[in-house]
Image (cartoon, rainbow, N blue to C red):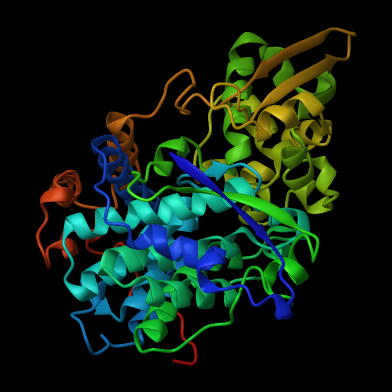
Length: 505
């Protein structure tokens, strides 16, 4: 049973008591000692494997090298045994491990997603929770419960409170969810979690310019920063320090000045006391390394490559018009009015937020690769640039309605494409969800998660280490206190460069 909690701005003289504040209600969910359902346990394991897949694949990329070097500049902090960093055996302080691993997980835009009123990558909760669990010697069961909470809070905030409309980056929902998850993991009391949630939100609200125009390497760092802030917020709260209150509903709070303003009204769904945390089952992962709204379009383009090969040649094509949801059109489509989305010299981060580019390359190649599809050579190919310029998007109100539907059976992230050929022929096709979606043509199950890990780790991690990690991940509920270092992965010799970038630390 889910309870809907009304949330609005309160004037200071109304003196909204803590039990009526959203941050307090989030904290109550975090401290509720409910069991984790078996299917939730299985999905948590899947997402730990999924995160490891994309983290390993990114270990040699510049943002990860920089974040790892920063983390290694900070020794293991007092009060625990330290936390692991993906790819290496050295440990660091948990907030810095959360930082380094958060960047590695997010860099390729290749892990799980949830889209509703706002959008999110709830797998971003795992790096800070795992870091704290390793540092404190927690058990697999502790981590499992914490991850279930992190997903629950983030998914329900995303269902009810839109950040994007006000150009606030989606990681503003991640700070509170990770703080709540850490609270569950550590078995903290409701007051401490309440203070941590407020502090985490207060420190992680930022504009979404990080995902606009010329997208920078900060795109991968933004959720890592939110995870790091969540760890630090919990630490402060555990030391008795308090946070701005009420953080959501205050007269000068987040809702009043960053979101829908003083007249805002939201209804936030949260599990009733004693109810299982099952929101992770509403989320979905990526088969392809690209923005989630692009997943279905890659699959449709691959299908069109086989069925209509003439569409791959710009000489045969007059125009390609993609009818899709408001969000897809305005965020990664031509409705964003970002000239960079059509620029063959644009950064990888920009190209993976460009439906015109992604659809063009997937159509021409009949495939998608997490590295090869983004190389400067691939983006700059003359026939690609010519065809790419003929692709545009438009909002379709029906696809927008389906995008926001709360009915999982009709919720959709695709649309309809019209390809007009130079001879006047019009080819139309449509797709609702990606092939890997739970309702798609080839839904991801444990077999596919493992295959994704083995594929991305091949040549980067020794075969024995791959097998060892997978065995540990699948035994998550049985891992005892202090055993969670087993969920780290060590890269093969020579994979990680010894020449770390230099900075201040």
